[in-house]
Image 1 (cartoon, one colour):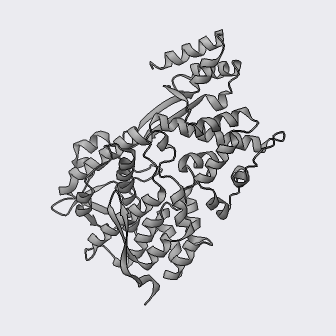
Image 2: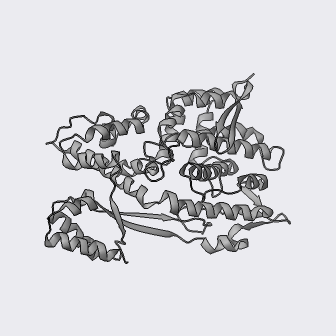
Image 3: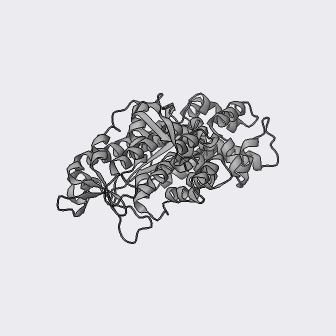
Length: 435
């Protein structure tokens, strides 16, 4: 029997708090899960620093990846023998679902911003590079690894396959919304996934939803909206991300200077600082390694690096006020100078952070990024774009919400001796709260 068709002698299951069970019968999937590259995802948290806000958010990219695989497995089981579905794509869909987050680094998006990295690029490199993952995929058929990488890159020729992994209603989002809600303990992220899976239908280039399932999709979109503002963009989590990014910036700055010697040389960060990260170096750096450096750097000679690391490790986060730099540039410039005057480095201790989200949008010709809409399959077999039929979705379509916060170390300001500069800082911070 060909490797791609090989089934385990009995079905394996992973007990899962969200989907109850994750079912594995394919030898290929079982072998992929066992690789070092996939097991590494156990050491990458799904929600980065969110556990400093919601203490239950300790789940990993490993959990989530299994969950996305399970949802796709269930979707394509429902698709069997339906028009437009090619069952030859079954294993490709399962592999892409399982491996879609393979390239995430420690603290994911914060880490990427600092070092200008792209986790999707590294996901593809792990899949097509000299890895255990690649060896298994190539055993399916020569070139199969490239197909999996193409699905994740959204360049694969069968757009229906791509839409299962990446669209406005895909297995990735359906898993992380429920999983993140479960582990953070909030109620926002719950929706009727069972109903959505039942009303999904394959079309030529995307999944569509039977019109009878519209209300379940409305619930899903509102759940996503709530999760972004109540969990993903929580200001306390963002405070931890600000400190994390400033630690990495400071360590890079010290590494590049000629007059500083680390007590603990940042060996695992050097290729990141120098901008020439090789795949094996990328795979070695997980969150346990980053925590080790931060723990040790608390004792470094540099006051800024040691203070930021101590804050991160012991959750002494920055306070924040509402602050829009576009409207309050004068106050920003004055604060920047005042922080210098009182001996607090504004580059590291005065940070504006902005978050924005577009809960649902449909493609508008001429935009840089296509946003394929969610289509409803009407009783007469015609397709209707969701927001044209749903008043709830129409009310939030295309509406981008942005939130700005100014982060600063209130404890350090409180410890300053009384002075005109300190008084003025406090006046500005008090006044901008009302904007």
